[in-house]
Length: 115
Image (cartoon, rainbow, N blue to C red):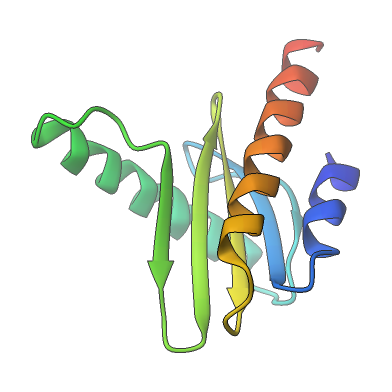
C-alpha cells in the first residue's frame, strides 16, 4: 500500500496521500502533517456526508469528490471499503491526478481482495 501511495506523492502536483477506512481509521498514509488521524476521520466523514447528499438527490453514491481551496485541492475516491484522499498544492494537472488516483484505487482494491 505504501508503494502505491508513494507513486501518487511522486507526482509533482500531489502533496499528501492517505488511505482510510470508511470509519475514518488510517490504513496507510504519506502525510506532511502530524494530524493524520484527524485528517483521515474528517475526510471520511465529509465523503460519507457527500455520498448521503448525492443519494438524497437521486444521483447515486459519490465515487470521486474534488474540493477546491485557495491553495490547492482535496480529492477523495472510493476504493472498495476504503477511501483514498489526495491533497494537491497549486494549480497542476488535476486530470492527471484523477487518472492516477483511479489506477491506484484499482490496485488497492485488488490488493485488499488478495488478503
